Length: 165
Image (cartoon, rainbow, N blue to C red; front, side, top):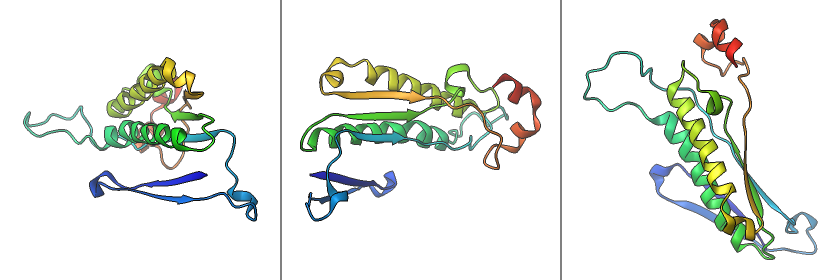
């Protein structure tokens, strides 16, 4: 039996799941030998932490919520579904971090912090012997900066940011 799950925004406080069963008449419904989850989340910093503040207002943490909490939720759900599949063959979690999680990212401190957290998550979970015994692996990939339309305009203009990465 395979599982399919859809994660909704956390403010809805629901996780909807739907099950489907293997049918010999539908070859695509066959369970695969190893299940894989790619925990990929990334948005640009939503607030410039370097601008002086009033010292009272809480910073906007949307970048941390998306870029770090997203992979944590995805990994947590992946483990659940890896363990409930029949036959239980384990699974693979691949967390997308960034070179900003290895070397820092001064123009985007919240993004760098979240991606450092993704590295820590992958290293911690990947070394956990219970998961290894269940044939569950956790790894991270760290792509470098790619100048696209999604990149912050100030980073595209700055040669120093691009040279470092």
